[in-house]
Image 1 (cartoon, rainbow, N blue to C red):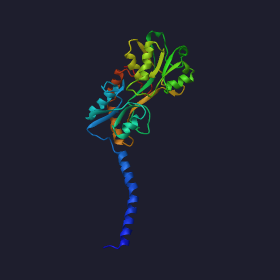
Image 2 (cartoon, helix red, strand yellow):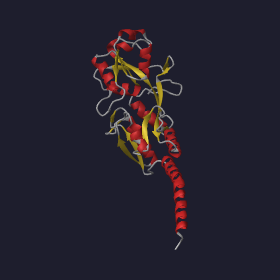
Image 3 (tube, rainbow, N blue to C red):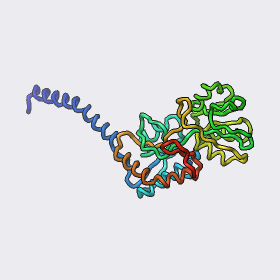
Image 4 (cartoon, rainbow, N blue to C red):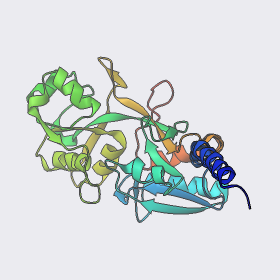
Length: 283
């Protein structure tokens, strides 16, 4: 039988040791959680919007769906999708909680993810009726002063319309919505076709795709890459979790290898593509 005093001393030493060790264990677990690479080697698991054409939908009809299928096939993995509307909290509720290992169509850096190399570059566009007799290719064109405009609120073109004194004659379309029920940018294009507005200023991939669906012939005109120091052209990349360096390198290799096929898909959907010198790529 050990003396009671010695037992109390040993228990105290053990307790102090556990208290000191707990933060180290927590840090090691946290580090492992943030540095672990993509979860599956047999699947390419992508989080996408279930109703956001031309990008993606549940029927796999979007160009992002097609590109994901292309990458999965080249990696010899089975493609799996997890669906989530691309609105506030999309990254946090998908990639952030490891629901998937990849999101498509990332145009800016987000603190919750890291970007791959870009796989295309596109630009905002003007959309107007072919029978309108218009020849407009810039937001500086004086002809816009007499026209009803449509623009998605909070986008770079809205900044320029405000700067040029055109915002009062512009109908605003919401930027952040539940895409399962509504697509404001597509609605702006449809309103041009119906004659409710004269010109819509819309992100190129949406403008071109939606214009093709209208009964009224529409013209889609790419804007300059930059006007008055406001960028109107943007690189689009894919998003993965931070610190997944090996996965990032693997995806970048795939994007470089599959670049011609990816460009072919994008042009098939009518996406206005710019090269590295911001010249329009013709189909």
